[in-house]
Amino acid sequence: MKKFFQFNELGTNYSREIIGGLTTFLSMAYILVVNPITLSLESVPDLPDSMRMDYGAVFVATALAAAIGSLIMGLIAKYPIALAPGMGLNAFFAYTVVLTMGISWQAALTGVLISGLIFILMTLTGLREKIINSIPAELKFAVGAGIGLFITFVGFQNAGIITNNDATLVGLGNLGDGNTLLAVFGIFVTVILMTRGVKGGIFFGMVITAIAGMIFGLIDLPNQIVGAVPSLEPTFGAAVEPLFNDVSSVFTIQMLVVVLTFLFVDFFDTAGTLVAVANQANLMKDNKLPRAGKALFADSCATVVGAVLGTSTTTSYIESSAGVAAGARSGFASVITAVLFLLSLFFFPLLEVITAPVTAPALIIVGVLMVSAIGKIDWNRFEIAVPAFLTIIAMPLTYSIATGIAVGFIFYPITMIMKGRTKEIHPIMYLLFIIFVLYFIFLI
Image (tube, rainbow, N blue to C red; front, top):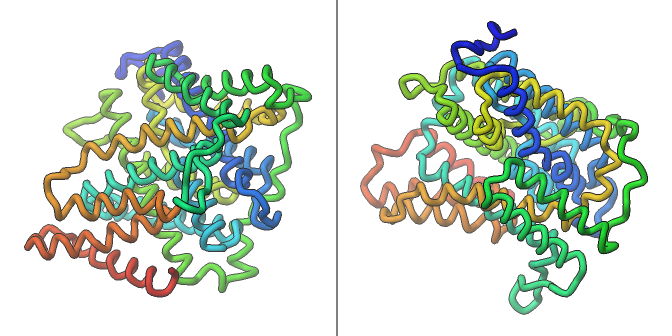
């Protein structure tokens, strides 16, 4: 085992890897709660049941996708990087694709499946890296920051801190409401834990908030701690059904935009995470990532498996950096994280105490972490600042990640051409410009 994971070469041991894997799990365990709440659209009232994914089934799909993805990453790529359904991508799936576009969640899962299969093909041919390199860095950073703002906005809504206001569109909610106060308490607790550098601060913030909610009677006590694993039947294989029963709902311009967005966002989530964590662990060699193809292949396979199980895009998690900081250096840490996700399946009854006010702080803090990419954008160059800013601001204001990406990618070639920098525009950017113009003409 030590030889397989190259413990001696990496200067690590079992205790460091186990602690690292546990730390990574605690840092990203919030997804076990946030993902089912997001995909089931639990915070959105008065929706037909047909638009909501089954909460229990999504929980199982989330845990299994995370376990399988992390296991593949650990055994094949041998990196201390864990995977799970991605934040931002699940919000796009639920709030943009299903709620705004009106696409069924089954067809949306098909879009995730198709994107995963395309990822595998692109990874095997080496095309994935080429496309990543064609997108200007500033727009990559803008997309990450925009998604961060969008997730934060959703978190504030779920907490009741930001509500609808007929005069000003949005406004401050009722801070005297018990559930809103609980969310505010959770934000303070999580901020303190994260500021103090507590490993798994987001997860522990949710635990403390849930306990406070039970103490003050805002959350009902769970009937049991350990219970039967919920059925996966409501979502398992749903991604494949539209390919046989309703092909017309899949091969449309609307679905093309959906698939492209899944592809694009996961592109940079994965690439950024791999490079960041590998740098932190000193695994980069000559500014290149060893076994990059295997790592991208693991990520692609996890997306396909997750779609079949019944969850949005599965991707590499930046929270893996917490495990690296705790000592993880090899794929054995990812195997430990995978085992812990499997064990979490038996603790489903505990999820009854995890309500929207409890998860809202997690969404807000994840948004803070993601929006940090804004500092990497060169705001002194107007031709860069305009498309970057419009990408960022359009996501929360239009309540659509896809629209934000579309706006930014349309303005980028325009401002660059007007600045006389046409040679710096990759041909793929012109293709994306055409696709997104068509998106506004035919879909908006």
